[in-house]
View (tube, protein in one colour):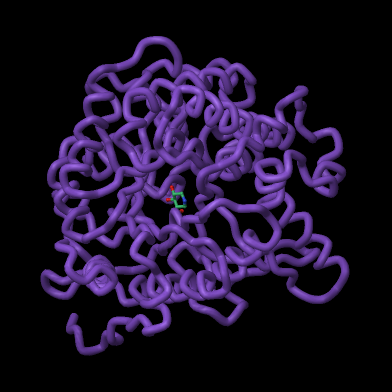
Length: 456
Ligand code: IFM
């Protein structure tokens, strides 16, 4: 294949380039289960995703996380790769079962040592570690006791958070409690398409409550311990648009917005759940104990927003993204950067938000292999347009603190297995060779233009 058919690489407008101050944090993101592999190595315990992957038919290509990108064994090389991009921060997650195999009790020194090497290796390269405590890989031992449905897991998470913060808190820039609690609750416990594969709405809503509660209590515990890292949570959010002006479509959009966004933002910032969603849930509403909501509303140092697309809904159900007139990613998600500006402005207007980070943004696209080169013009375009969308939000007054591309590497895309590639770095899974795609080189060059004088 030749390069002549490719569109030119995107150019960032001068207004956009000027919108980001010197403190703005540029980064790339990954999560433990999606890249580490080595899931039975050096004392790591099993996670719910190891168990889930063994169920026939749940992962599109029948794969699992046992090797993934073999990041556990290729750490130094991957750290050099991250440094070569010139990013300010690297967002990663700690695999709870690697450091505390049973989810409570004994810690695993070899697991902690791996993250010591990761954190120290980042710092040595001038990159801020942004640590996430829970990116979905709950220790299987806790699942056998009910997992996130069981209120006891809240206490285990707080203990885990405390142990990690005591060990790493003075070396990392930020600690995120949970990544995308909506996904853990709803995809893990309502539709069951993600681990642990439960299909029971009341359980899902209770899980969401326990995740939020554990988040708030962890923040309180870490602050009481004097943790110096910035503390926050990461939500997957999107504008939910009604398909038409019809009252029925508007009503569905309002409830869907309540289930995705207000169900998390209202308790975090107003210490209450949205009344319309509570009424809609009826007997599936969560069991809440006195003091829970006040704990959940413990002030945040930052809020992370993962943005990929919007949803358009009607009274007949979700509208097929393919009918909306915009390009789609390989996941079938509409490319809709306007939604990111809209979302960030709405968060700023409706809630007393702390500094906001876009903690994930990116897309799965088909790569084009041209000799040694891996061209991904659609991903370049996607990232550039979303950076423009963030700049517009900043110009409209939204307190933006950072932006992170999802993802550094092609990786295990959960129920899609390895078929969907989100990386700005291509991974050849047969050799584990990493190759920067055009998007990685574009991002590196963009960051250089943002940071004249800084060596990448
Ligand atoms: O790969 C995931 C990530 O783990 C969480 N946010 C969405 C990404 C793309 O689906």
